[in-house]
Length: 345
Image (cartoon, rainbow, N blue to C red; front, side):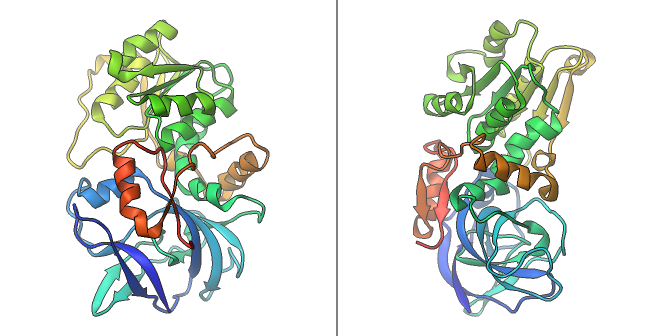
């Protein structure tokens, strides 16, 4: 069996669409017909060569999506044929199987435990979570990365509570999900910071109570005008080291928590004034919003089902697989918050 996939052959060059031969499933692997894939800055960094040397070229890409199980390997018990699933880079329960190697004419094409820029993909069992059939597959795709990373950073990593103030730096897909998470947690005020008015407009609709245009001055000073002592929490979702520093500067002394979510370019470093830490502030990292798929994905689905979480604002632009390079370019230029690729059109 063959499938069509977008393959990274050389960093800094467009992805190549080609037919790949799907190998037989190993124990613990699942073949998924992918419905939708999200596109995030991690793939953009990989494509542009900003994550350092890539020893796995050529390889497949994509780490969040939705789809339907169309075949299962031996010993798979977590999902079954015909079941709708979330595909996520965040590991859950089930077999943890090494990446697949596809064949492209006479070449090997590498893939990790999950890839989603293809019409079918071999996925490790622990990267899949079954979902109710009535969950919109378009929105379910973002439950694989954007939602757990952004919302999880607020709820799981920062442990946000009702009435706490929060500043979210970066109103892309992850940052907007952080805004939604702060709204669900009952935070107030919720301050969204970005350099694009279009994204700040979406942040308002996702629940932000205040907006800061970072092109019009120091965002930390702007935040201090809203919360004189600084916010209780901040979420950094830009990947820019200087913004990571601003996120720490913006929180209050003696207990303020700044969570770094964004991925910086390979080799970039943060330069911190240690007095910020002497003030009793905390700088925390986050691995996928500290989300546990088996615990949290069903809850995220319930937020979608009852309308608590509305992802329509993030998925208003859909691309075909043929236009995957346009999706990456639009993401890089900030023209879209979270590109969504329809794989079966």
